[in-house]
Amino acid sequence: MINKPSTLKIINLLQNYGFKAYVVGGAVRDAYLGLEINDADITTSATPTEVTTVFESNGYRVIPTGIKHGTVTVLVDGEGVEITTFRSESNYVDNRHPESVEFVDDVSGDLLRRDFTVNAMAYNETEGLIDLYGGKNDCDSKILRAVGNANERFNEDALRILRALRFVSKLGFTVEKETSKAIFKNVNLLNGISKERVYQELVKILKGKYVEETLLKYKKVIFEIIPELKACDGFDQKSKYHAYDVYTHIVKTVGYSKNENVVRLACLLHDIAKPYSFTVDEFGRGHFYGHQEKGAEMAVSILKGLKVDNKTIATVETVIRLHDTVIPANRVKVKKFLSKHGYEILRVLIEVRIADALAHAVTYVKERVEESKAVLEIANDIISKGECFTLKQLAVNGTDLEKQGLKGEEIKNALNFLLRLVIEERVENNKQSLLKAIK
Image 1 (cartoon, rainbow, N blue to C red):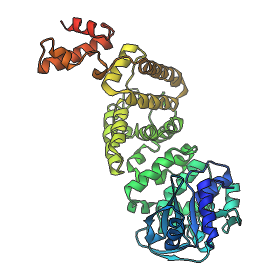
Image 2 (image 1 turned 90 degrees about the horizontal axis):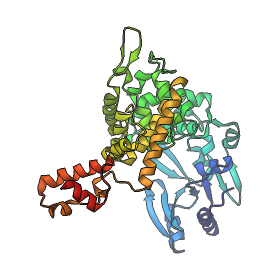
Image 3 (image 1 turned 90 degrees about the vertical axis):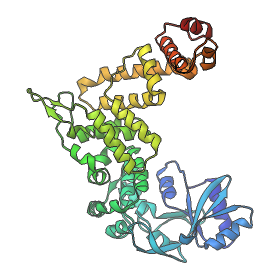
Image 4 (image 1 turned 180 degrees about the horizontal axis):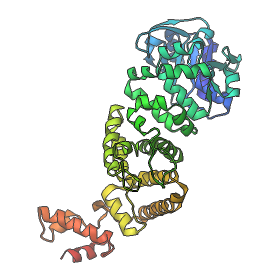
């Protein structure tokens, strides 16, 4: 069922020393479902001290990553694998972390503390699949069910609410009735979770195959972590170009977009300012003047609050500000855009514009999608041919111009002038032509 070499080495070595050891959690679930396995966590009857002794005596490096909670990391074949002692947990004082951990003798006690039945299975080659809480049946039925009392599980660790949405988005599972009720009942507990962890789970939710269904069915949870989106829910755009309210349009845009963090974040937030920029003309048509700039400002505030890295924030901000900007499928125009904003901004912008167009009314889609694809094709061709659109690519530099008698600000102005000539294809990008032009 699980034949990952590093995992098998660890389990076999622990068993050789008389300890019980199993792969546990998501790796078992994904293996049973026939999905690719990334990380495989191991649980064992050995204490952290015993694990350390076993592996160090066999030449492996052991890192005490979470001794307090019974976890060490062993480096096997260049890969870090977490090994955790069978344990029970109690007194979750902050709706996230247990105040105390007690090591237990049997894997059954360890599985009882886990979040969902599909994650509460264990496996090794000797004993096969250990499924004490019906995880196998729930996998077969595509059901996500809390282990034991759902309210207790979410009060122990409120981040499990977002983990539930992540599994729904990734696997397309239906949340069992009582578990779903508990999600909505305890959603306010998310306000006490660190913003970094909330963001990590949000990104995983956005990248799921079933993200549209998840964002629509569990929008109350999404609004809890991004309250600004709530105003978009049910907001009538009063436009023949739009088939959906603002929030549904946003969700459709996410669903149509490339499965990439920065692209999906930009799609999620691209129209967030529409309810705050809405006007109706004398014909009853809706307009959202300035929602791009306002949306960019709101996105920065939201992402900073979620502790997102500065590079991602800067990209999302620029793309939202420009998402309604039309870039003609013209080589010179594309080079000018590349010169000002760079290829990465253009690429993400085009991905967002295509997804945005697909989430409009059908009559609006074809022309805008084809235009956007043409722009990206031109940009890729410019990049592949190494055509000049930056000062760094110019065939002359400041030293060359200094030799021509230019100084200081004159050099800067001259370089920008030459770059413009090259981009506009009025001068070839070679040293002789450029120096001639500057004279």
